[in-house]
Length: 194
Image (cartoon, rainbow, N blue to C red; front, top):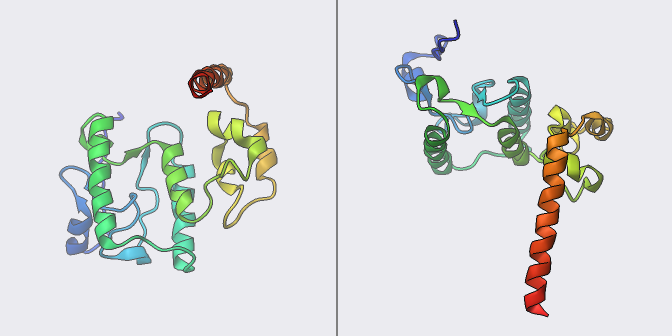
């Protein structure tokens, strides 16, 4: 009936579960919805996000790749203090951005979330390294391909795959309008300088 869900961690001890989850509110205390500051990267919660749009698989894949890189020692988590501060900030962001209910405690924007996590282990697409794809990376949703352009487990077919994903017409027009407005602003600024 799509009336909501209740997060449950029956496989954890009561102490650990209570540290991570408030069962009454579905509120989790996990850095980027994956790691608890006191436990570190030895226990990852993959899939503890609710995409604001699209599917969960791309977000879960990015989380799993991040966990792999942490286990291999190729990146590290921030300090406990930083993680705890970020958990509080994200809690406030979720409350202000999404309808405040037990149903929306782990909701995230998938593209922004994936970019943020991918940046932690070097897989966030960089426009300067991919200038021929910049338009698509800025205006389209290139699926999980965009996070395979560089970094660990980069895929040599990622660029071709990104090029095959169409940019919606509306975004193309919006992009052109934004570029024209930026050009006008630049000319206006330059007229004052010279």
